[in-house]
Length: 170
Image (cartoon, rainbow, N blue to C red; front, side, top):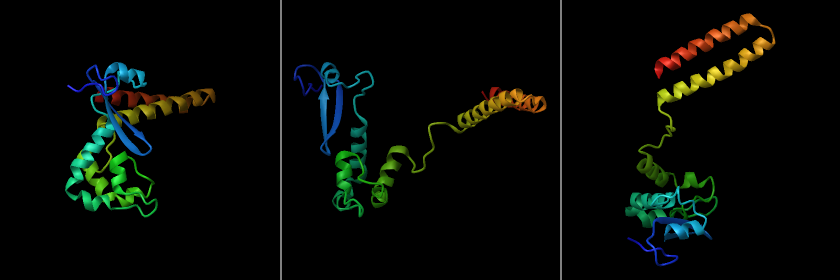
């Protein structure tokens, strides 16, 4: 097991990555030293997101690294090798300049280049129904205030129908 790079006595439990002056610096720290540096230890895992991205980038494009590192953004002059070092792009145009490399990384990390979101389709449909019910409840309140009871009854019936659908899908 690794030893804390700060105190050099206790076992390292937290891998910490920091970007200083556009250079990535990684440290293995014990829990006490991590807390002293203000790192939320309860949320810290054995490896940081920067390490994951950097590792995936290296693994994905290692074979072409010489050619790829010379790719440059025409707008800001940023090199792809700069992105690999610090894990950030220089400007919005970098996405176009490094598209081929970023597509490979996205496919490797997510299995796709299309964002699917965090919700499954059914969960998303139920959430949409709940949002619609919330909007209808607001309309119902307004209809009652306006004493438009026919409209209020219609809205109430629509809410009940949506509630039955949500409960039936659950």
